[in-house]
Length: 265
Image 1: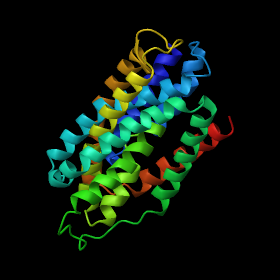
Image 2 (image 1 turned 180 degrees about the vertical axis):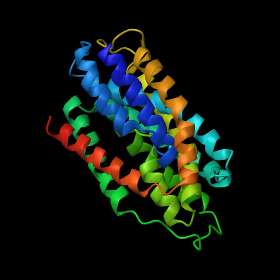
Image 3 (image 1 turned 120 degrees about the vertical axis):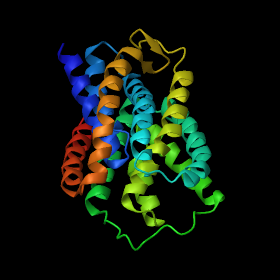
Image 4 (image 1 turned 30 degrees about the vertical axis):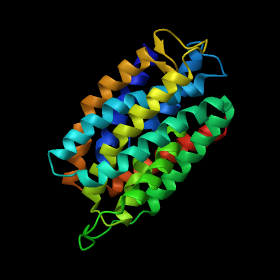
């Protein structure tokens, strides 16, 4: 019951964050899974891969809910997304197989460092004013290359990529609401391709609690996904109705504590 409650609360938080910031919530889900999975008897050699793979599977559902909520508010730049998606997907598949070759300890340290870096980025990021209108989309080769790097890093850490995509799109001129909405949509190819990669990479792996598909724990996925999908529209409403500065700083503090905890072992 305690583990179920952890997953429900974690999923709800991940859903709100997905809608609010355009992130998938993986940096919340991965540490929660990393705490619970060893209690379920998952071996130390694979529990981080299961945590990351399951997180991406949940994001594959959360990102769709968040994207639809932003789309209803005209918050997704679909022409940019169309050029961005192939690189994101290709990078995410590659990232899953890179993560498969890492030790659990190395993967845990990468997630911890990623959490701290994302926290710093969220604290230091400046809001762009409305005068920075988005006049011309970046060329397809740029979006393909940047997307591949974001997809690779996101799949290794188990996130939807919003913490990387939002600053990039904002720097290229999108308003914050549209950067967040487009980042939410960009989480779809990352999560689906990344989760598929973890399913394939872990297909013959022993020790993953049943029922499972490769490195994806289906029981954890179901619990987290129900809560996160239900709460994603709430985050999208907040993103379009109010300044997220205070919430972003609170999220950054939480990520810092999570990252330091994972780095400490």
